[in-house]
Amino acid sequence: MGRLLNVSAKTVERWEARDTLPASSHPRSRLAKLHEIAQLGLTVYTPEGFSRFLTLPHPAFGGRTALQLIEQGQADGVLADLAGEYEGLGY
Image 1 (cartoon, rainbow, N blue to C red):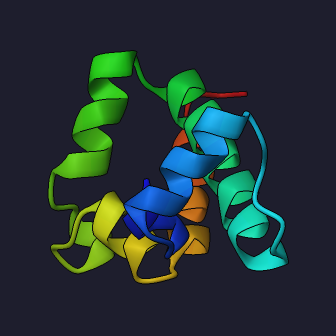
Image 2 (cartoon, rainbow, N blue to C red):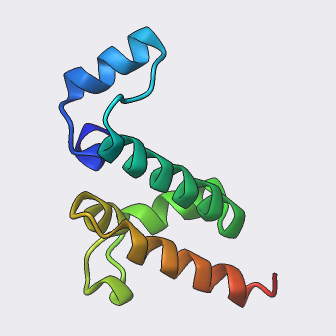
């Protein structure tokens, strides 16, 4: 989680122990984006399918995984791909 939010693991542990959210806007924004991705991903896929979506290389991501894109600050591309899958389901 620390890598996805671009903070240390210790910082994440501190937030969890205190049951608080990040004070800084950058991690809060990334956390909100991760929440959006998780919500949509679990709507489109089963939990197992979503796990595979996150961890397997994807042609639309240039052979990278969704998690790699998120770590590189490209969460919007992951969200866009999920949105396309959602639309393809006929919603």
